[in-house]
Amino acid sequence: ARGPLRSYRPEAIVRAVEEAVRRGAREVRLTAQDTGVYGLDMGTNLAELLRAVCEVEGLFMVRVGMMNPNAALRILDDLVEAYKDPKVYKFLHLPVQTGDDRLLKAMRRNYTVEDFLTVVDAFRREFPDLMLATDIMVGLPGEDEEAFRNTLELLKHVRPDKVHVARFTPRPHTKAASMPGQIPEPEKKRRSRIVTALALKIGLEKNRALIGRRLACLVVGRSGREGQLEARAMNYKPVYFTGPEVLVGDFVGLEIIDAGPYYLIGRAYY
Image 1: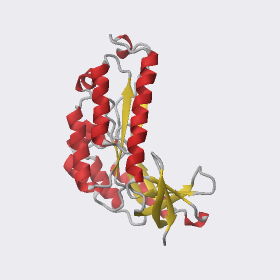
Image 2 (image 1 turned 30 degrees about the horizontal axis):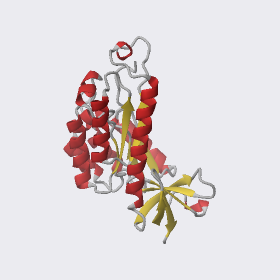
Image 3 (image 1 turned 45 degrees about the vertical axis):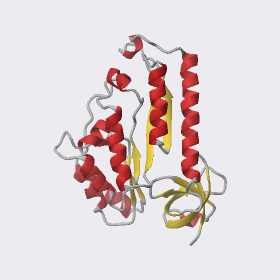
Image 4 (image 1 turned 60 degrees about the vertical axis):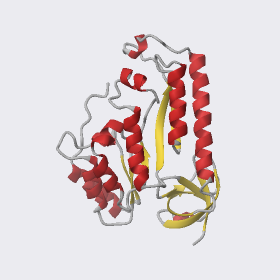
């Protein structure tokens, strides 16, 4: 439905970053339907683009958007190396969708659970504080109890920091809509609740383990929480704290004093 993905020329992206930073931007987001395939249509790749963007002079951070496991796997070593630049948030959004290889093959995802794990392990070896976000879809056609258990076991094993949970919805005139093994809506909702509860439990455990840590953070703006600012740690975790508006755009040190499943609470220590 989207058609083929097309890449902007790297020099155009670098120019846009230079202009944004010149005008005061402190956060640059590289985004696409799949950032991992960037440049394949013009003989370059995401790792080379990251290196070029990070060479732009100025004080700013780069957030890399979602990439699929098969795309990341193709350039894995170079990508991990590019992520070592201090300007790059140690944040990885890597959708897996399901923990069952049979379903991944039926979805024509062109990767396996093992491919997903290979990418995650490579990043975590280099970046122990990596923030990992992934996507899970429940109720896919043919998702029997064993397949659903495989997804739960994968989440328990990988322990992602954030999980985007969705229920499969058949779209008219698609192959998936007419596939056998359609899951009833009440069962989809039940599975969605189970995955969501597990993801929240894991996220809370991981974030509470950070209480007492002191983190360097970039203040990105006023938060939706009354009277608080939002900052991003160097792995892109959101940290909320009380402080003056003048701090927006500055790097500050925040001591973590509390946590929720998907956020941290901090206080400035310098």
